[in-house]
Amino acid sequence: QVQLEESGPGLVEPWQTLILTCTVSGGSLKSNGYYWTWIRQAPAKGLEWMIAIGPSGRLDYSPSLKSRTSISRDTSKSQFTLQLTSVTPEDTAVYYCVRARGDYIYEYWGQGIQVTVSS
Image (cartoon, rainbow, N blue to C red; front, top):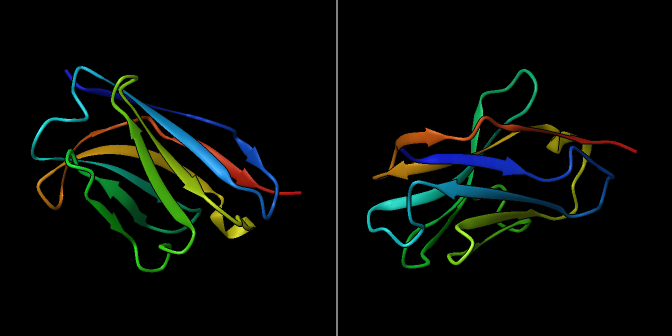
């Protein structure tokens, strides 16, 4: 059974870079047909798809976040990492790492990690 778990800081100061790591167990980041994805939900807002990486290294970005987001993977550690630069309080949200099958089938989710951007 595939399990995902987010880790990283819960509090980040404005204009710093947020780095979150997702650790995957029970599956391979190199398996075909899956996209490893970051999704977030800010207070009183819906889910916002951010960025994803496929098994071949293909990258897909949210247009609104492309300038500030990046993603990388470490297959030896079975981890993939989100970087979000120049954060503001509007980036306060619960961040989820997700395995997607196909374009819009989000099969497995981490439990989410609360990230607050504040001075």
